Image 1 (cartoon, rainbow, N blue to C red):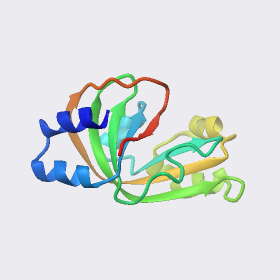
Image 2: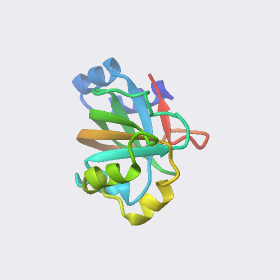
Image 3: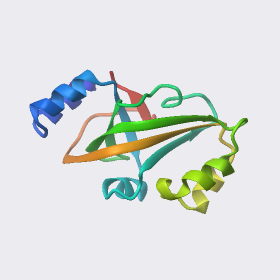
Length: 150
């Protein structure tokens, strides 16, 4: 999948950007609406992933890694560099603390917090500049919403 993404990115971004992407750890994130639109138009400054288990991206990503943005059930539409990443064990930090401090930048509503209330781990990914690209399709199998590519 990594090679397929790089090949299609070469048709859409400068050689300098490709070289930068190749030098970085690369992840594929699957994003749903309305959060994808909020991210693409710059309202959503932080992406979050909550889970019951220590699954990616929890403790698997770093500042300066690059995230390829794929619409759930759709195409790859953008990429961004991680400005900062925060990991939380929710037995030590309450979900309400995260809500109070980051809700505005997350662009989520009360329903989101109800759904996530039984999570045990949280990853907050601060988004650096997002780069929209001409959409392209890749074959992705499985239900994973986050994958390490390289």
